Image 1 (tube, one colour):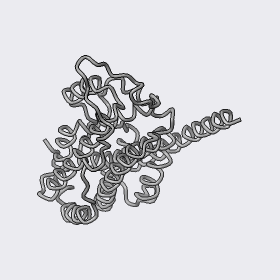
Image 2 (cartoon, one colour; image 1 turned 180 degrees about the vertical axis):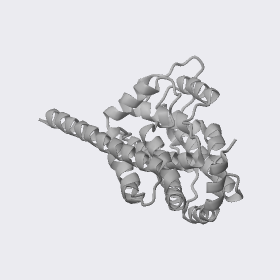
Image 3 (tube, one colour; image 1 turned 30 degrees about the vertical axis):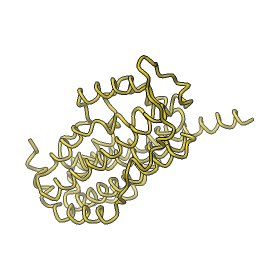
Length: 305
């Protein structure tokens, strides 16, 4: 059941939801998965034939990223259930349905690409999909405020991960597909970011408390995927998504610069404590991110020497 406070916040946000949805519909570009798939590169999967990594020579980290990307998109039924539960207004429900339809298109185009190019073992992928969707594990958000804070960070993180994955594919078709998907994710991010910005104006204390919770406990939506931690380490090892990107490209530009939580006035004592916690957390993460960046730079220098 949606908490009463969540209903009240979403009702106040209703005009903004409508305006942002209209903006999204005017901005979003129509595109078709079938037009982006290099079908001429495909061939039948002969019965009894086993997939081989030699079918598509990709670095394991890129293969892991593609697997996590598609399984994340596959978990849509549970994301829709969570997001639609933020509030009951018709505009919000219309947005939830539109968002779901667009994310479903991402699953279609990525899966078709992976199948045609044999980038991933199709048997292993289907078994992983059955496990992921049967489990229905998604990050839990206790309120609409938490949900808005989380999806803002998550959509931006997903955009970064998709785009970086595409840049490492060394395949124009794959790069174009991942760039197209990332462009959609950016529009989703802008919708949620701007709605959360208005929510901060309406109820800054509730939102700061939610932002503190979501920043400190952030988890990518791939939670629940078999061997997710191992995949995440591989993905981070090649710079597709790691602490450095999370700090420099998400927390700093969104939480500190756009939401400007350090400058908010009139917070409750509980919200003041939350603000201090999240600012300290971001500062600590920044130090970790810098150490990672320095280590990677040193490794690159050594490799090129």
